[in-house]
Every structure is written in structure tokens, then in C-alpha cells.
Length: 237
Length: 304
Ligand SMILES: Nc1ncnc2c1ncn2[C@@H]1O[C@H](COP(=O)(O)OP(=O)(O)OP(=O)(O)O)[C@@H](O)[C@H]1O
Ligand SMILES: [Mg+2]
Image 1 (cartoon, each protein chain N blue to C red):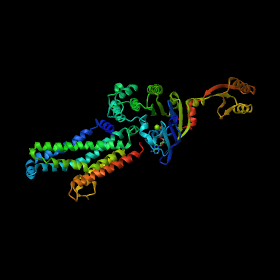
Image 2: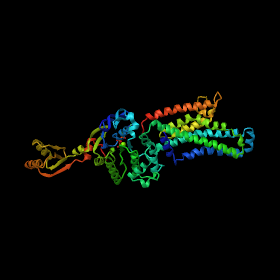
Image 3: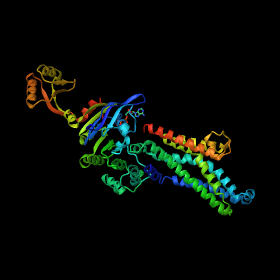
């Protein structure tokens, strides 16, 4: 598995993948910088008793759709590397287990998005400092929760996009699913609790964000196992 | 353990309801350069995919190094290098990084990369992105990738596809050297008999999914026996007369041909013709080319 991941990391070099991983959070933070810059007095007045909370809330509103579309684009790019020159046949004729190859692609994807989310967290802190918020009042716990909980709750969507992108040579389908997913996901909070696109919003009847996280991890693992099995049994073009 | 490095039994693959490969019993011995020959669409690539575990046989079994592929795929593939159809590569990476991406999965020392680059003479170009390579260079990179894991069995599907004559010669020499220098067994497919004839010691011919010939290349060559072609006046009557005198001759309404026998027999045959007052214009030896045999075997759907 280490070999597979090392190989995957080498393959995404020079493919703009890392650029996108950075672009997502930087874009969100810059937009919020503009937002807070232009409406500084109004917003600091509105969030006077919880400046950091206000900032985090605003970041998360933009971060969710960015995360959803990022999931689709990154999955498609990583799989596209193999589809482009039909490298699957070479990769899968090597002494590696098919399921491990699939798991490796999924793991790489999760890893890239984890980096993105972490950059989002760092960016939020940096923006807060720039805006002159009190460094002593940083709600570290809440910040981490609001960045990493949606990330974990979105695990099934990550596996889904990876699976679609790997299975289909034509990336139009997975990308369409991803874009629709992003739009649906923006209104996710209105759905029933069982809809996975709602989970990243961390909203549920019980009012316990951890339920959404647990569902995400659970379904993510199940989808991963199904994807691994399906990929292992399939003929390679 | 059986003596075969590769052995398939009743290997069959159905695609879209049609048997694309049907009952193929491949036999490859250690040290063989096995030429896998067949016209376009015969099922060579499909068979090779099954040998590498890329496609599952609909029916039948594959044994490599005496183990069943379905059970020991990873152990077997550790000792197999392959190039299927056209070379795969990551265009945005350099040749070196392409090999490195594979090397990380094979877990062989980094020095192997320089060695295989040397073998296919790509060392100088190794730091360039592969998307800028010529077809021949990509093909050579494909072979380098196949060699990376120091395989005992090399499976090359049309490795000279798209190469110029110099490139073909180079690859051919490379393939011929391999068994002697590294004790490698090679399966090489092609739709050109002349190519196989120049490197393989054993040949399997497949057409429409069926194996129609499998033996030493020598045996195939023996079939390329010569015949004697006779140009005479009234060939049809001459044919009747010669048959009546017990000569083995053929008349296809255009040409009168006799199976080649010794010089004396040819002489008496000509004498008989003259005696019966046929005018003999020409007596010439015609050797059936391997290509002709191949075309006959595959029912005309031969190479270009
Ligand atoms: N997915 C598929 N569905 C139906 N038929 C297929 C499929 N893939 C391949 N075939 C058919 O299988 C046959 C064998 O194809 P294969 O690629 O094995 O031939 P080949 O001997 O390698 O030919 P070539 O010399 O052109 O490479 C062809 O007639 C092809 O049309
Ligand atoms: Mg082929």
C-alpha cells in the first residue's frame, strides 16, 4: 500500500492537482477577506460578541460547495491520468492487488482533500489575525470541528466520485454528477436526514453533528469496500 | 511441476456473445521465443489479456510457472513483464518518472531504471516528458517498463508496431538476445509471419479465435516446400497424360504444377511430355513463401 500511494503521488506531479488543492481554500479565504474587508464595520458589529464564530460561519458557507466540487474535480483528474493513455492495463498487469489499487486512488483523494481542509483552517486563522481578532479568543475546537467534520461526513461522496471516475473512461458523467451534487449539496440542509448530501452540513434531527460524521464514515467505508470488490472483478480495457 | 512455462487449457473468452478466443491450448517452454501469430482481430490481444489476468476467461485455465493464474496472480505477475497492444505511459511525466512510478510498485532497486533505459537506449532522452516522444521511443519505453522487474517471462504484444525498419531490427535483436543473456522466456505476438520467422523458435497461429497451428518454426518452414511449374502447349491434355503415367501433377485451369521430386524424376517427366509431342516452354521451380502458407492457413485473411 505504501508503494501504491508513493506511485500515485508521483503520478499527479505536474498535473495541476496540487494547484487545485491550494486554490480551493485560498479562493474561499480571499473571498471572505473581501467580504470582511468591505463590510468590516457592519460584520464586526453583527458578530461583536463572537467575532471568530462569525468568521468561521462565513468561511464554512463557502467552503462546503467548494469541497463538493473539489471532490469531483480531483477524483476526475486522478483517474484521468490512467484513462488518458489507457495506462490501466499496464498498472493492473503489475503484481499489485486490484483492490489495493482502488483503495490507493481513494486514499490519495482523501489525503488531498485533507490537505485542502487543513489549509482552509490555517487560512481562517490567518484571516482572523489580519482582521485583528483577539488571538486569545480563538475557538480552536469549534474551528477544527467545522473544518474536519464536514470533511469526514463527505467521505461517501469522495468514494462515489472516485469510483465513478475510475469506472468510466468518459469523465463527463462523473463531473456532471459532481456538479449536480454540488448544487444539491448547497441546499442539503433541507433534505431528510438519510440523504448523504445533507451530512456535510452536520444538521440532523438529533442536533448532534457527530451523528452526521458517523454516518459519513460508515457509508464511506461500505462504499469503499463495494468499489474495491467491483474493481477487482472487472475486465480491464 | 510441468515443463511448460505457460500452459492454457481450453482457454475461451466470449465477448458480446461471440467466442473471440476459443479452446486455445498454448504451450510455451522455458527459453522459448514463442511467436504468437494471427491476422488482425484473431484474438491475440484478448488471449494475452487473459494471460496477464486483465480479463477473466469465460472458460478454461491459465497456468504460468506451473501455478494457476486465478489463484496465484500476484506471485506470477512478479516474474512477468508485459507490453499490451500499444505502450501505456503517463505523458506528463518524463521517461525516468514513468519508470519510477512503476518501480515503486515493484519494489526493485532504483538502479534498475538506469539499466533498462540503457538496454532500450533511451538514457539520453530519459529526462524529457514522454508526450513529446516519437512512437518508436514510446514503444521502447514500453519495453523498458516490461523489463523493469527482471521478469522470467516477457509478454510482448506487437512490440514492433509502428516502428521503422531500423527500429524493428533493433527490437528484434533485443528480443533474440534476451533468452541467451538473461534466461528469459518470451511470448511475442505479431500479424507478420516474416517477423516471427526471424526470431521465434516456436510458433502458434491463431485465427478467428482458434489455434490452427502450434509447433517449432522449423516445422512451419518445411511446409514451404518447392514445386515445379510447367508451361506447356495444351496444358490440360498434358495434365491428363502425366496423371495417367503416375506423376503427381496439379492443374488449376491456369497452371500446371508438379510436386518437386528429384532431378531424375523431373527429367523423365519432361521427356514424357516431349515424347507425347507437347511443346515445353518453361520448367521452373516455385517455392511457396511462408506468407503464402500463412494466408492459406488463415483462409486468406492474412497479413498485409
Ligand atoms: N468488448 C468487445 N466486445 C465484442 N467483441 C470484442 C470486444 N473486444 C474485442 N472484440 C473482438 O475480439 C476479436 C479479437 O480481438 P483482439 O484484439 O484479441 O485481436 P488481435 O488478434 O489482437 O488483433 P490485432 O492484430 O488487430 O491486434 C476482434 O474481432 C474484436 O472485434
Ligand atoms: Mg492485438
